Length: 462
Image (cartoon, rainbow, N blue to C red; front, top):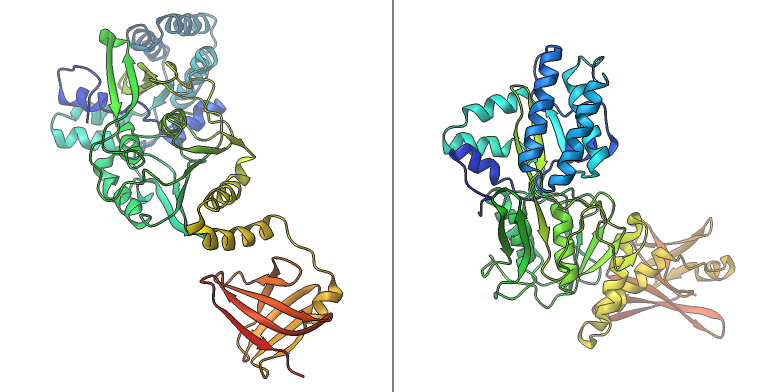
């Protein structure tokens, strides 16, 4: 993996390898809500109260870090001045709890910078681990502290499924280190290799690792690398670039329609992913505008008990020549985020209908989906006329409280959901529909229609 610069120790290099969008969900929510308490992941004992000297030491250390590292020097000076003024005015005098102090500092910095990646944490355990990280093993363990639940989270792949109409679905909640989650990513993409379209749900994805962005994005392009982003780092006045990969495990999906679900919680690395694919006209975004956090961050020590997440660089998209900081990424199809999945599913099926080879499968699924979104109302009188026994009592249709049910040979009965006035689906059997046959206004039988095109007919018993 590419690094961000030079450092005298392996520990520093590993910290620099915390990629441009490494920020945890708890950290993001803290900055968003300006909570009065800082993230304290590893504290086991009640923390000693702050002294005036320690407060001054923390603020001085923050000021030095901002002056030396923060991506925009002018904004850094404004944050430094704001902290200095608040300290001089006694705004922090009454605070003795270190977690509350860290939360207050983080909120004050964010209030000035509007940068949702800036954060201060009270985390003495992380500081001590950082000091002791002299070997490669130690440094990698320190790196993984920022992603403590990776395995339990299935490395971000919370759900992988095939929706009706052969549309793939991935609920991806974080971009984890591909060194840990790369096999899971490859397995997910392999499972979906025969789909006709793909939906990736990023509505609750708050970011993570840029190298996982590279890996997943690469599946949607040819092997010839495409630049994802140019990253400018203020330290050393350096540029580096991320590109799609010339090799990925398994089959690429270069010709598959791609839909990305977004919302206000879509943040950081997730925004990099959608921004890149949107600007290359490779995906359709459905949902709401994303959170607006673009800056890469370093996680480093301030004092023996406090740490800082500090943005040190900015991404530059080769197409737009800018980024999404503060603005977020707008969707192509703007809908409330809770409706994004069904809208994307319907849109993908409508797109597949343009391909005659996939017409039957997509049309079948689309009809059922539309009936779910816009329920078909069938008059009770017509439904009652369908009730009866069919095929020598093999199948029985009943009407009860405005709904139709079907039961076969005394087995459990299933609700019939109207797709039209005479055709019904069964939620438990998405491959089957029941169509009523009428002649001269009277029900003469039913058809069992299957999604492979086959039809079986049952006459109504007399």
